[in-house]
Length: 196
Image (tube, rainbow, N blue to C red; front, side, top):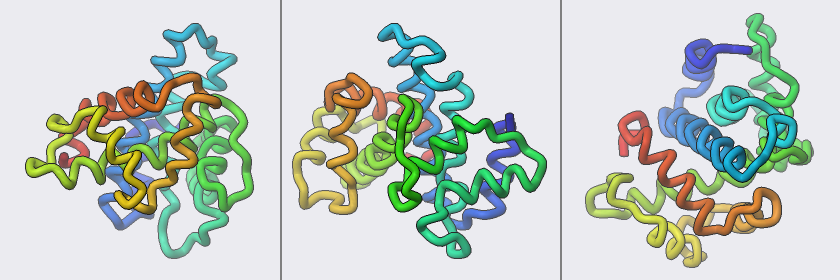
């Protein structure tokens, strides 16, 4: 499989918006954390649909084709093609999860990996938005309760797909509060990389 360093080099060549790159780092951290939590709940590698490194690669590369040259309906699909053209291996489960994170591709989420990327994608954005309205603008000062309050306020971060985030209970077995806490802790763990 493509290495993390190779993946970062690839996305930095294609994605000029540094905030999108930070978003990919956030989803990478989240995917690793949610994998660990699902494993604690007794999920096997077969249940999980992949090893931890594959889950994290989904997060790291999922928006690696988020640029003007790629139409929205191909965003999440093109990145696998680019990687393969350069001789990098992208496992099928990783390609599918990246394609299914964007509903415009018409690729449906199926596995726990797919659903985690699909649901977590919007949540990482809500966590960033909730951080940026704090006086300190620091993830370390953000609480799960504060994010939950922002989630319930539909006028805050209107672009957040709340209807997707709420699927965490049915698709992954976590309450909304648990899901937010997992995401927040994962992102706090890489706050320096995120500049927050």
